Length: 315
Length: 265
Image 1: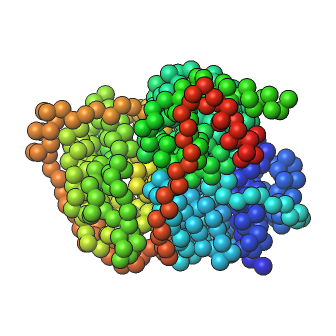
Image 2: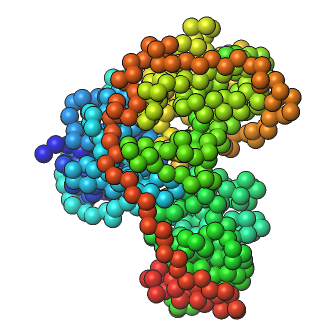
């Protein structure tokens, strides 16, 4: 069975959920080989084995870690050359899409980004124009390179050997042009990561800058906290939490928009959420066109009341 | 400092966007177009860089005739010259083909005088793949400094330093010129064209190039050359509007009930 290369998304070796989703999809197509860049195998091995990686290519070269995007693309190009994989799957985040882009040019391969489904014949499904259209596409040249959005599939365990294969790439001078001189980890909030969370509660202009009710409601549901562009531009919440066209795209099981009108830029980032709920004072707000359930009311009374009811029901 | 800014002419996101029935490409004719909002940021950044030192800003686009409007807007903001690559064979080009045409155009601009900096936006507002900047850097062999939310250019040291806000961490990235930099919407506040700028733009040079001018074989671009194919496009059925209740003192309780019934609690 042909190998399917999966680029591992990790934080200091802790494998992120998106990777377990990619391994699950890869098994439909062939035998998953994880590509682990910038961490030693010890922290990642268990998870990769549990979700079906037959092999783990481990790249620990400092040059790869210390430079942006280009060296990792060379790593993957050399692995494609060596293994002739059925496909290369990457997570749909900014950096991995750039790696995929360079890999496509290097290998003369077709690239599909932001897939929400990959079938066993490598046909992909994408959701475009702010979720208004569904597109089915396939790669017709080279090795299919596909980036997949988080939450596209439920990860299923299928234990495999995860044989560790150290890989030493040969890097060109051109790949070492953009050097990372400093890394500042994001402050930990204790809440789930926005793009991976099963539930996202977002606040917008209607919060007036006070996110306490939004955060309390999110914590009652075990949710991540998002913010609209208006709230971020006003300096009320960090840009890392922005949901929308120029922020993160989320596709959780439940999305709660509070004090968000629902401009097209925001909808582009959340419209594929499975269930959508809104709380807004303005009954004309376009967000209500999307909702499964909406409350026309003040978020500062509605959210605390719901929070209390949920906490009480838990006892 | 010789700066080239790549910009895209896109269907207005506020308008009804759709696909051509015949070939399933984005409808770029039947809708109002504009300079992609996210491309105003690299134009602004380029202007700030030359205003703080010296240099020339050339704005580059490819697309149908209407795409000249995107160049015009950038010239009104203050860019010095424009290039519009316009050729029937380009229609339906994907990111791979787009990056090929833009790379050749940048190389041609470089023949007149070395290009120090290529600036782009973080994404287009229609395709939203965010891959063309990386592809351009790959094709041009330039250092790739992308998603810059803060940029410092040191003309004397011929280097750039950028802040890049990643998913889990913030990176500081540095590179020597010439380099390719893509910028986010966090980097600056794009200016509005002034009346003076609008008048001055009319006298600024705009070159229109064809694929032949760039030495690009038409067979390498357009829909037929794409390394991917769209098999089917379907309009997503409009979401059925759910229940909307007015808060009469029990809105929060009703919300909690809905969430409990949906097993979210």
